[in-house]
Length: 279
Image (cartoon, rainbow, N blue to C red; front, side, top):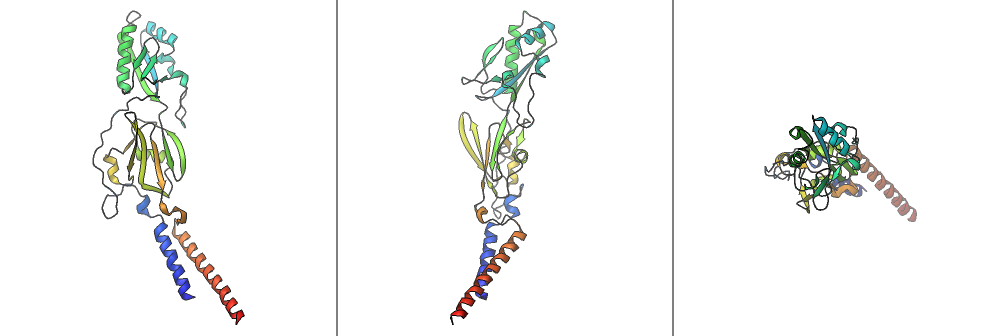
């Protein structure tokens, strides 16, 4: 009996050691060392402005102090004076009314009123702004003071997705530089049983889909190419292997051990009764 219970106790301890969630598995900003098997990442951080892709939606606002120019763009539906009331961007989804945004078409162009189609794929919003101001200056030269025209360009409906042990969801990008930590925090973090050592980001780079994998626990992430999240990124965090037999805290461990020992004692008592009754 004692030997059996001892074996059961050893089995419980082995199960606990192999499947419990330790701080090393979940803590972020850990120092990379060979001892804790957290990798180092080279200092490759060089943030670049987002470049427009097919399917992006752009908000364009035209401003001018010239009354004739104002009237011209009020009639065309792109006046800056009316833009604040054209739509409301949802704080939860980041989506805007598609009727008042401009789509980057399959050929990489945007069809803008009074100007026509202009190539915008691969351009930053600042480059599009300068291009539109140049085009509009040429078009409205005969209508008013074209030098007093200013254009504001923003990408709307910028989203990223997170898939983890806790669930899945889409989330808006509300700021220009969104870090991986901010992205996970906005998603409510990932579950205790998510493997932070194998975080994958599915990202479109120059028209091709690529999968980037890294260990988000490493402190070196801050200075690496993995630090910033881009629009349309899909962040996937797989489950830890030990989840099926997972023990998340000491109280659960004690309960498992006590239950196992009790069950072992119960089975042993029944076997002993059967043996005694047969004698």
